[in-house]
View: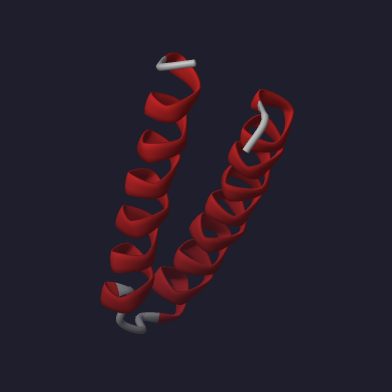
Length: 58
């Protein structure tokens, strides 16, 4: 992947992260479980870290 493609993927993951955070807030306000979405946030964070490491190593 080129640095531009990596940056684009990081931006996409950031947007997904924001969307999931909003969904968590909605579920919390209605008293529903957020455990699955919190796991998704952790997955997104790890993926962003992986792409950043790849970008920094180039």
